[in-house]
Image (cartoon, rainbow, N blue to C red; front, side, top):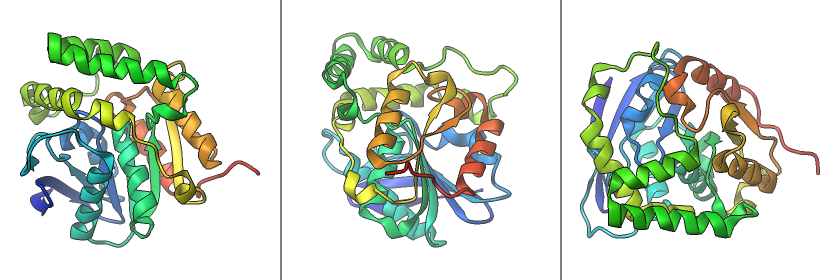
Length: 276
């Protein structure tokens, strides 16, 4: 694995590259960084050149401008510049949660850079029938962090998003993951303070995405929860047939091997669309 840093407008982006083959970029969700995909990235590296990174403001990717409310569009531009830096032609892109929103914006704005996008549970709140409820809830999560701290906000957020209390004990964490708690806490604080409201207000460009190589998916264990329902709503707007992954909203953490196999299957099968 090689690591490097890319200067983009307003930030330095830390990234990692491993494996051989077509480029597969993994975009983490809110509070995540390259480490979030550490176990998943190791599985397909004999099939793909896997690129992981820390989004601006998280972990090793430093902001170089005044801190404020963050925007999906800026993160998508960072990803576009990262793909140009890595090279290798149009890339496969996988994004989960907020990372799926970034992937949707990247595909809409820079379609020539995306070979296939797999958008795992993109939380497009405005597409939900109870959008007002979820907008208010996420504002409440933001306020909880400000008033009671990151731990209280995370508990509230995790319950609603179906984030697991523990992962498969048989899937041992790599040594570097055991040193993550302080970094994760800082990333979640950044997410709740500067991303959760603006990211949840993001609306993808449906017209630009219709007919694009986009696969919208959800975790099979997450069917009763908002992120899965949002994925179905996005798929319907795009006229796409939704796909499923093993696990829940973060199935790539608990079941990296089966998750990676499903991802490879989707990347090697043309996206299907609903009949008009």
